[in-house]
Length: 93
Image (cartoon, rainbow, N blue to C red; front, side, top):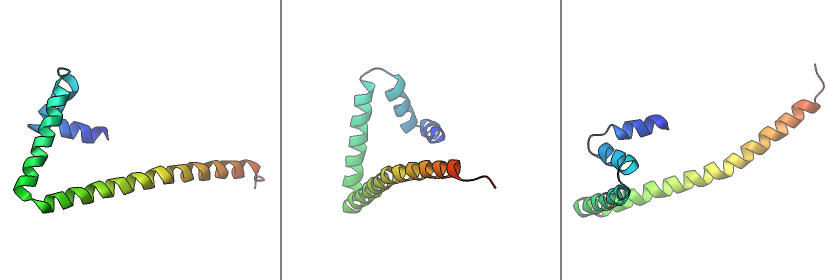
């Protein structure tokens, strides 16, 4: 994940904006958010409805992935606890 962050910071204009939002003045975060909203609105204006559908599909995919990740994390941790308990009670070969 750290490599993705470093890669995003190396992008010519967008990376400078992210770097300024993280390390700059306190109000730079608001300018960055405003710029993201304006760029999104411009893309919706230029590309239109397909861009809205693509964005909705991407957000639905991310939401489903998050739900699966959150529900699977609990089952994996329970399975590893049960396996560790099983290995302790098992007779040595």
